[in-house]
Image (cartoon, rainbow, N blue to C red; front, top):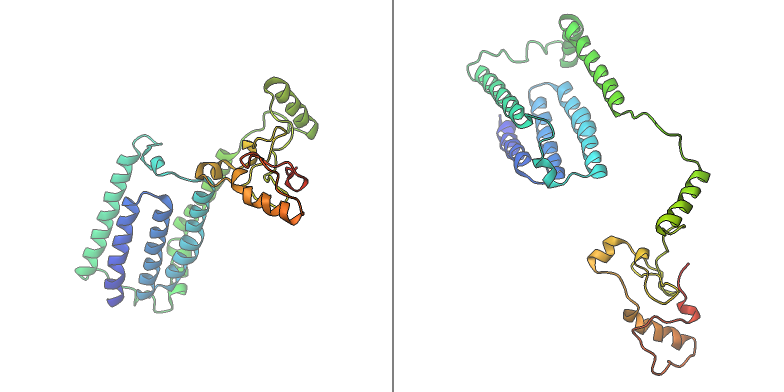
Length: 270
């Protein structure tokens, strides 16, 4: 009972957090707390098989797969308010009320001592007793559930399959398409220019120089540009002077430090 009164408030708070947090990743982590606490409660009820299934299957497999999908696809907070299925919210409310009714009935049976507990069924051992029930009294329901899971997996594969309507593009076709794009819109034929202005500063936050000496916006990530962390040529005036000093050259008098340098050490990265 002590374990229950410690974990029950934690599970309730985590379950409420799943409903009210704005980020899907935070909701998944709170769901992991609920699942792990439920596994501990299974252990206190002398049901080790259910406890390990809860940890291995649900927490270790399904929930981790859910997190991987969130990290790969990405779900914004605004996506959660979009109702993709008609009547989705109404069905969720009805399912929640039914689940709450089941919990109330179960707690009522435990309170009124109408439930017998697991001491009798677990007499030969929890796992042997559970196996005897699954493959004897409930074998039909067990096999039907297995068939439904297999059908659901095959159905997901069929729904996710997309028929290829066009042949796979070859290297020659891709090259011809690049030439066509260049002729139509002037799109660059090759890859984007590599970052880096000076020979000693080829960092990703340093833009490459075009032939006229201006910085190429395509050579720097848009994320760095949005953050304002892109290094400019005027900011490297001290580096230019240091390079000239190492080469034994006198600083050019009157040269505008705001313009990019054109020495050999300051050649653009290619």
